[in-house]
Length: 147
Image 1 (cartoon, rainbow, N blue to C red):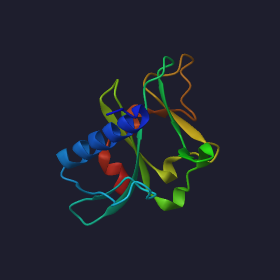
Image 2 (cartoon, one colour):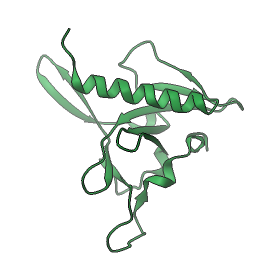
Image 3 (cartoon, rainbow, N blue to C red):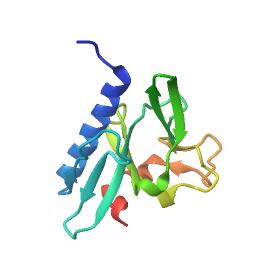
Image 4 (cartoon, rainbow, N blue to C red):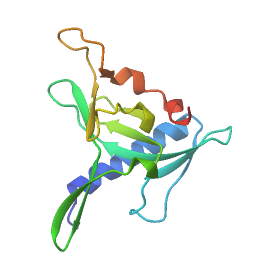
């Protein structure tokens, strides 16, 4: 059977996010179709719910993980990209295979200037800039998705 590399990476991202959430006592529910706006629903012990969009992203040589907010799909007319509708889910969970970690950020964590993407930095900037820099370590706590 032929492998669909992009789909395989996406599936691995979902599995790793589910494992991380379940390890922390979060119940996870999956939609019946892959064509839903969120990849999973997370429910904590207090009954708080978060609709989660999962991304698999690799660490770039610059020390950042870039998260593109466009969704890609294909049909008989070719491949298309569409900007994600952030009203359809509450947060992103981003799995990075190089760090073997999941980074969680809510839609309201996204700066207004970042309509198309954000970058999570693994290491500080060379010039020690702190303003407008999203450090990945600030987004490791799974509980952030319920705040």
